[in-house]
Image 1 (cartoon, helix red, strand yellow):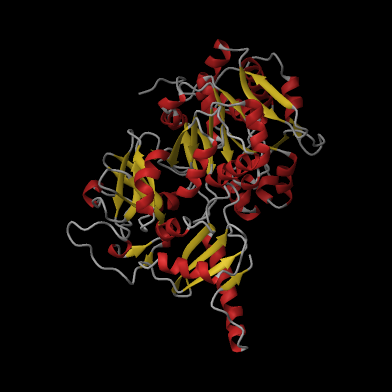
Image 2 (cartoon, rainbow, N blue to C red):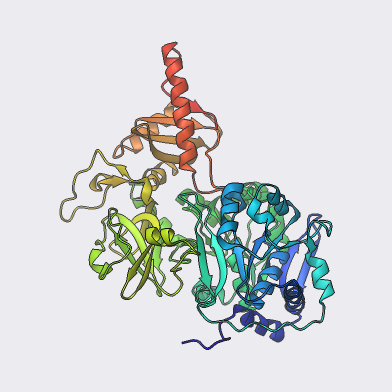
Length: 568
């Protein structure tokens, strides 16, 4: 049992503040391209002052504080100020839309809201957000609309605010999923969980890196706890796949030793660097995650980050990290298997986790012996995980827990929502979202000793076909999905071409083991707004259905061709 007061992550950061006050903690560019630096000592003073200002407004231990601030100095000052008080940071992705965002507000009933000026526009559309008692803006709003975070800090400079004593089970962060595959769920990260997650993220390969260019919001918090400087990328929200040129300039200016990001983001940076004929040699450790990365894109990264060890990381809001794999092994051993339609390899599970593959039809929320339910390597099912940094509960959401958690005598397991399997080497493979299962009309049970193949699985999933199609030089990104009772491939080409009968024939040939009713081309595949990497299949399905309805009218007029175009 951890002692009271020993688990507040603010204590870890405070130790760094005292041991290295003059070392840089956070560095960013402002809107004018000017560099802003905050030392560990300055960070400690600013967070203590904001905590005092929040306490003056009545914020206390256990109160929820909703944050709508992009990655940057203001965000991490606010996070540590809230945690310092023992209050709870709440994050809800604005891309989920006003209705779902307001539902998150209703679920947690925050006492304060801290947001950038644009974030406060949500108050016009969200009745529950308007009810929040304490409204704070990072900058730029008049006092009658919101308190100013800067004024609060200046008004409490030099005021001592003690770090609250908390228990391991006290909530620290509540992170709502986007709800892309269901209703938003608030993942409750307790102080004990957060500490264990930061320990899990502390990859031994990071130890030698004194600086980081983090692409995911949790990582600067880890860096603050480890005494590592974070160079915060300046990005337009929702435009990470278009940021390449700007990011290359930032990397050349700061020369970080470590970097991370989603596949679309890193590929855009690689494209910009290759266009300039430059490499990014300062980076020694590069992590990519948030979505599957094609082997073709991964190979491109190796040509730009020439001095880096590159690792692919798999995880989710509720469990991060789950598995990882070196790029060299993926390209050497797993790429040929992906080309055969076997899915996307995410590597070896982290040592502290237990991982099982459960039958797709297993729906129980309680089980006395889950290991006995698990299926052997080579068999496809839903991935489930259990361990010290796996979230075990949602905030006030019993239905979400019944659907996504499994209670067992030796711990609570989390359903990842992904389908996959283990190979004979113990590597975990992901084939798509479990709810995207498509019946395989080519199914033939595998014979003993036979190698894996798509026809040997009763169900098919999107990543299996996409890993094949995405390898083609003319393809930028593809989607394989079921619509109107048939299986379709929708392709965004590298050139932007939206009518290519030759490529369509090549795709059909490569997917001989998959049912394909047709190949359709689209000017741009819809992807998630946060990482710009995950295909939004529901939108693709709607576009495909609308296009098919139009083509039916064209067919009546004798106008339909063999290859058809979808306009997003």
